[in-house]
Length: 450
Ligand code: GDP
Ligand code: MG
Image (cartoon, rainbow, N blue to C red; front, top):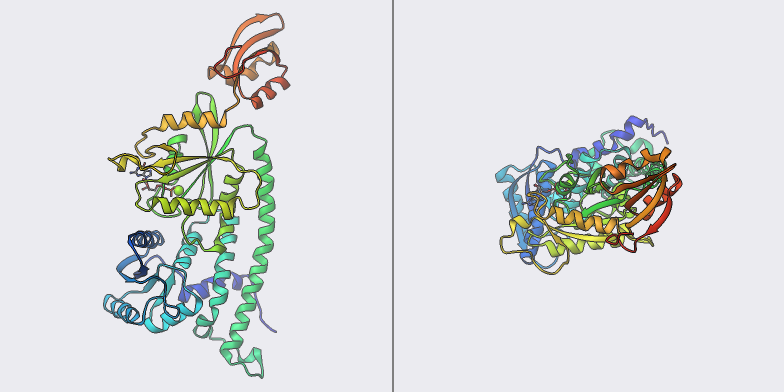
């Protein structure tokens, strides 16, 4: 088979395929279509608008059909399809956006019936991810997810997309040119998938090396998880006083961001911001979260940020727990402790809703941040002990991080050594011991002086 495939062709594969029919250009105007059964569904529909906005799509109109479950052939009923078509013509819409993942057949039927580009929720999320993936690994993962999404949908798009004509390749046979071309496309895509998988194995191995290096640090690692737009990046900025990317758009943070922040004088922790979780996350996309998932998997503490000002917060909370359970910690024995943070209380004049235990804060306005820090400190520095030890004078400079932050104090000098009172964790003590520290006495708890 003379299917010359330069790598440039490979790169253009998605561009060609998704480009003509399905790529979201960010300048489009669309009609949003969904089905609703109650007010909670309406809220998830607003989420679709926010997703569209994130992708740069302008919403021209929304069409909602009241029904329990989607129609098998066209998602919404026949009558609604006509309504959407009429609206698309009248408003001159470029695309119609559906609030669910459509089956390949549904997408094809709808595109034929409406005569406009049909985009589903998964595709939209995929596209946002493609726009925002910053690391090499995330980009590979997103491309892989896009191709896997595309593969079963080729048939509908196959005919109009390639002009080369498949007849010459397929030769004699029962298959029409479209069929042959389809097969060629499938082969191309499968080969590209194979290449991507191989590259990913390498990228994953590189990440494991970086992780090992990081694990050597005794600084506690804290991962912020939560539904998209719940305020994770805002909180990270609060805690670390540096700027992470905050936006009222979904998935502003795709790759994980790590910052250092102090939770008490001299007590620093590493905070990892993670991509937000969202309902109906296309399954293929989960590996694109790899860096994020890892930040959560190897954390000493998870902070679950919940936007309690949102009417659907309980559902969002459940979705996040499910994703953590099924995708993040599935098969993992070790699971870090979780601290719930009920965020955006500034928007709730009537107080914090009940149901989930946690610390209520406003990441934006700063309410209760000190309390949160104290709580974090108590969780990640739990085994601090007040101790007295002797320390060689020649190594005193190693004590300075502790003494300058007030956590250690020299009480007397005795010839070659200093006697020191300090409040330290077991890990810190190990380091001090290696530097020549010799324990004199140890209190039972942080409050107890030796
Ligand atoms: P992320 O997707 O979880 O990282 O959420 P972001 O930190 O990007 O925040 C999403 C939106 O919520 C932004 O517009 C923030 O300004 C807003 N936000 C975050 N925390 C608060 C808060 O405590 N109160 C209010 N009113 N808005 C907040
Ligand atoms: Mg964010």
